[in-house]
Length: 219
Image (cartoon, rainbow, N blue to C red; front, side):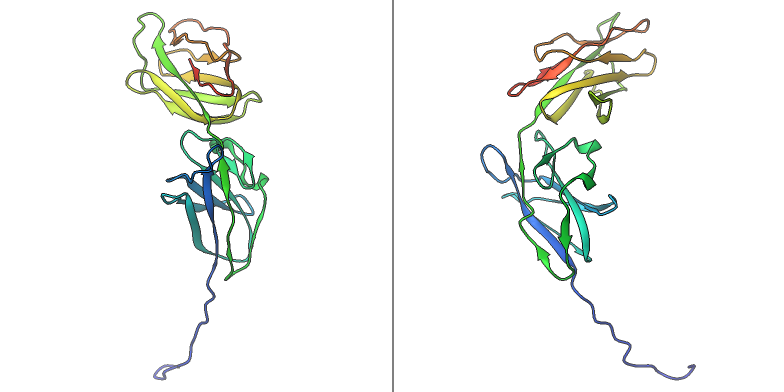
């Protein structure tokens, strides 16, 4: 009421829940510094990410309410992993296919750990088929053998592209640069060392790029 003072409008707040754990190298058990742990709601929407410390430890303390959550850990040159021990491709990883993590408000949840396997790297160079000059200003896109998009790599000043942190297996690559026809690569061997040429006319048949355990692919 105008002219009156109302008192005792109080609030009692509960502390939110949190997730914590450690991200390690699967081979050595060493904690991985500067790895990212991303947390998702039950509907797959992102809540954000946190980075591990020098020993691989992390705490995601964004005041989580009671509910179900999912988590993904990633680090350069390692295979991205869903909790719990489910490898996936970072940019096409469906968080809700992981193991659910149940949180109760006010209760920290610990032991949400990840053990990341070292990944393989697929790299190469895109050149003009007529001049052999590096092609810049475009992208190379990578897909799995089911045609699912995984990631893209912007072409550097030397026409180079790089995809780190891949699991062993077969992949399809597509290069798209303004002024050139698309170029495809698929189904090949780790030892394939041709440059990935683009021509202003025509297109090549698909070539294979396979990454075997213990080796990197170079195209």
